[in-house]
Image 1: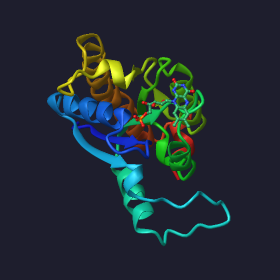
Image 2: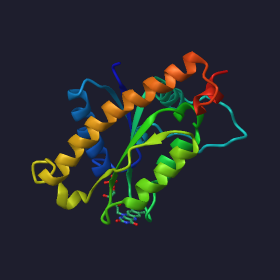
Image 3: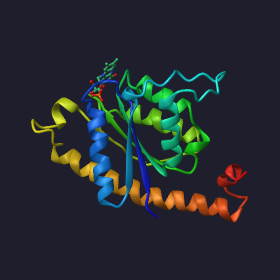
Image 4: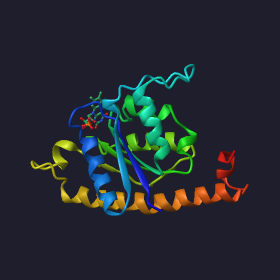
Length: 196
Ligand SMILES: Cc1cc2nc3c(=O)[nH]c(=O)nc-3n(C[C@H](O)[C@H](O)[C@H](O)COP(=O)(O)O)c2cc1C
């Protein structure tokens, strides 16, 4: 299958390091045959999620929902804010849950402290929605890990290529099996609860 990979960037900052990192991962994933799209949340001005309002009367929200349903696999990119994801990223996640089930997620982060808790918090949210996660992520200390020409230093670039490859390969396996489980009507799998 051609894997459809959606990158979602949660920085409001122009020229954000986490967004730049996400774009590099997506480019590497295309080399492995993925179709990719990128959502920059700073361009969409999404409303704050409100469970009392089921309204889709917002062009940005409709576009994001269409992209979420299109995606087989996700790459979430966030700045490190107080050791966690940005509010924009969390707000994006709050709009969806069963759309994430049976799909693989990878994580990148811009942080001065490796961003482990940031990626762990995104991983927890995704797990709560029955999404799968790669067991590692990639973080950049933007001011140090991009050189003056905007290239990633080689140590990080190697991890980016690994992340892109694993998202494509494991993403296709997990999505393919989830869809097969749905089609076969197997009851003793978590996919069964999404079959109606
Ligand atoms: C409100 C705020 C909180 C931050 N908290 C942290 C933090 O807890 N740890 C850290 O390493 N960096 C922290 N930073 C620095 C950002 O993570 C860093 O500048 C990062 O490059 C921003 O990502 P971006 O370039 O994608 O916007 C914080 C920055 C802001 C604006």
